[in-house]
Image (cartoon, rainbow, N blue to C red; front, side, top):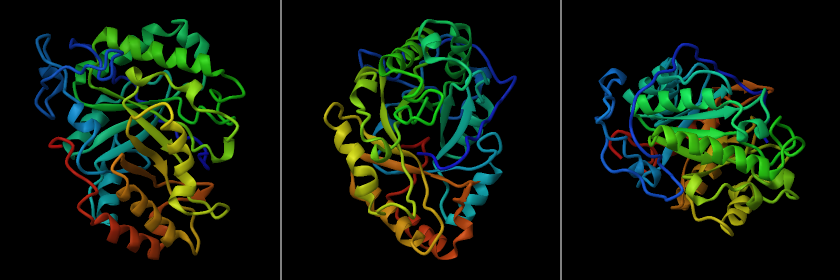
Length: 334
């Protein structure tokens, strides 16, 4: 469960249009080979361009070293400050966007130019998933997908995460598993129709510990609609801080129906005497599993202060472990 208020980023005036081909994880599972030049301008895109080949980014040899920090990626200054603090440049930058906001092509481009992939958490606060599945907002989805296609740089889409919890508008109190799957597949299919092959799709439940009665399989859209299994889970003072205690049950349940790689799309450790050990458990847990692609640290002050800078000993441990060459790589050269 995200132990914070939601952070919403809107980016008006950033929607664009162009032409490319299929999607990264079409139901057939076949990506298109070839790619535009990394960092190429949006204006340079042409109808004859091949879609960016995201396949090397789906299972890279090294780990993603990610961060979610206020104002990024529209401004990369906070990311640079975080890099200076931790001693390593993040290569995955997460942000939160409300359904209805425009695609932040400028931010995605800025992140890419720094060697980072952007992960966008798309949050449908003011529309029902049933309406999305029924095509009620197709004009918006097509506009968004066309902007993603025109940019022709990889972007990770994380739609309606924490769907297995009861605390979100799109959670179990309001939405059935069938409605969630129908909405996810519909959005994916619109992206496919538009040709936005540069989208990477991250299906991201909350870790199952607080909602063990909710089974994940009914919410799974299918391997043809998913590239990564994301997870959201925090190290809190009220829980066992072993890595396997937090993430293991979710991973084992997912493995009963999918072999897609895992990535922790949001995590942090609550400040306190245990924080240094929590940081060590996070790095060691991710490093030990070849099927776990990396993590995104939620560096915000929301209810609790999840920022690393408030805990000097934990920050020192984080910096020491981040120096491991297994973490971080330039996404333009996977």
